Length: 139
Image (tube, rainbow, N blue to C red; front, side, top):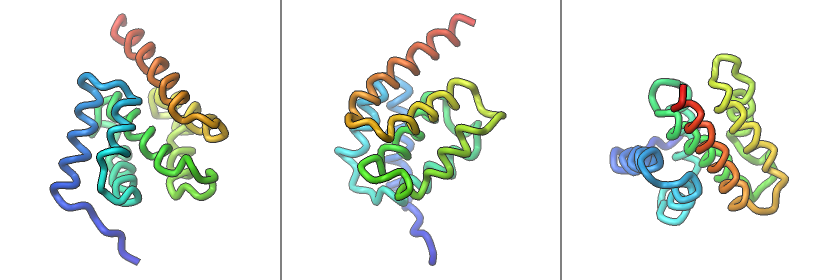
């Protein structure tokens, strides 16, 4: 069973979305934009994002958080067990080598799986990540 890889145009769309998230869009806007404007197959995109996330230097911290949010939200309407990337998310949350704010963010995503309002969760996560970035910039 081979996985269909994304073509160059699709990869470019993903990179542009992640870049815009780190420039001016809120996390909620970035994730919503992905789902509203994306004609890409979510599994293929999520698979590509998981590959990008494996290299911790490939994406900026904000881009990584948006990528994790997309991985989670792509399957948030289903039970967690139906998310083919749930083990990836759990492993990332348990990664002792990862930044603490990243692990906390992923844990919050995983906790939100039982929440009724993914928009409310993304808003609170945006505030959470904004606070972390602000604190990190002070040091």
